[in-house]
Length: 253
Image (cartoon, rainbow, N blue to C red; front, top):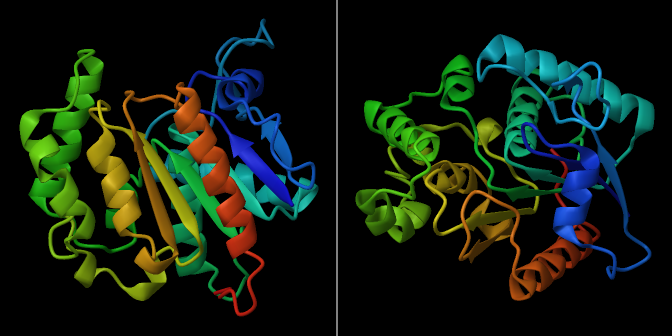
């Protein structure tokens, strides 16, 4: 079982590897940690990397092209484990591919998102109606993280209802989004209860098949879980994905 691992903006593959602490997982699972294509310091190869500059369709599609090339050269991969900007890349890649290249098989059998999101600009680019409420929720969340603050009270209050409300998932009406723009492979969603950007993670979870979805919320912020109990739970969820991906009848769209 081979899993591609994609880090956050400004990180590198070694930092992400050390944060996850997956050494004691099954030897039948291999992890390929890679650096993003954009080096933040051309003179220092140990510096941070990212997958795209701006959260705009042009930049994201360019990053999608890099990922497609990576899969072609080094794949196939059974699954993908991604954090923050890496997760944004994966979610957009899956949706663009399902919409524009629906004749191709799914690039992954499962996906694990840590502090994941789907840029609303990508949904709009794909013709999905995005309400002003959804845009306002994400804008407020980004402002909070820029200020070094936690989630705002209205978001925290709405969190549980939003995860299970297909009419209003933090402003997204999931019932108006076509099936072709839903992620229908097994997914895991991990975020911190103190992450101001958690509403974006809830929106991404809402776009995934609820019957093939697991959610784990830890006590941290916008970060890979640090506490041992949360890291142990992540390992259990990774193993759930690897097992679920091999079940007979696993849907490949």
